[in-house]
Image 1 (cartoon, rainbow, N blue to C red):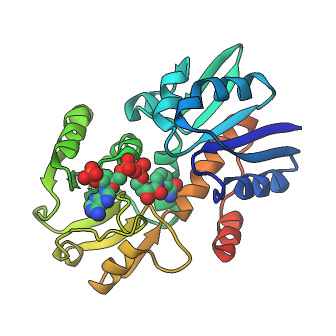
Image 2: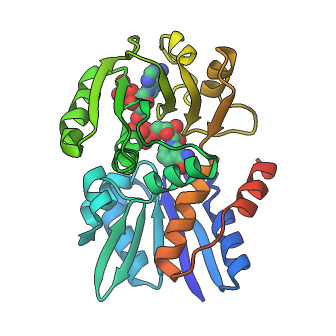
Length: 271
Ligand code: NDP
């Protein structure tokens, strides 16, 4: 039996154990998958111990993704560009790491017939999630990418980091609206989830075809409700990304790629 876990703090509401168990059932693989709470101060010793004591792979979530990046001996290119990773495993005595969040997002967009090529895109937020999706988003060649963040310096730092990507990338203060008609607006902020309002110029929605909120909930998310109220019809949430990133981790660990639609529908109906 293969043994996996998701680690984070807090962790008890994580959907990952359910998602991975469903993948394993579908593919006929015998696994166990637990949710283990680890505090940042204990991260290095606790994680090494898990990997030495029979865990074949670990998913890493808030607030441990940067620590996981620092702990790993070998990190994928996307993980290096993100400075954070969500998937760990051990091979030949070394800890390997990858970041599957961005790939999960772009797969979910493609599943919903959304192409980023030549798009005029906005990403709201400049925290860990924005950084982890940027390499994958830029690899799909949008025409222009605008980052809007409450703390402007953080979005400007991201622009500096990714300016060599070949995509026209700019940072603007949160209340500003980029020029031209927009293809889509991706929300990576935690406003709403943490009970705070998102200070945003609502006119941004009038210029966009779709919205994507990395957050998810049973009902329409706070951000997607703002988008809907402003007239956007295509409003997607991050549950598809969550299941997508899990499927990519599962493939890294087992060599087998689960399909995502059935599990996504199952998880959606159980929220
Ligand atoms: P961070 O704490 O690193 O970043 C939070 C971001 O939200 C920052 O840019 C912050 O701005 C911004 N923000 C917070 N409150 C407000 C507000 N009231 N108004 C405007 N901006 C605000 O978190 P992460 O980037 O790691 O995660 C962001 C969200 O994405 C989380 O809710 C998380 O659950 C979700 N997520 C979903 C995933 C999925 O698979 N669907 C995967 C990963 C994350 P500032 O810089 O000014 O503080």
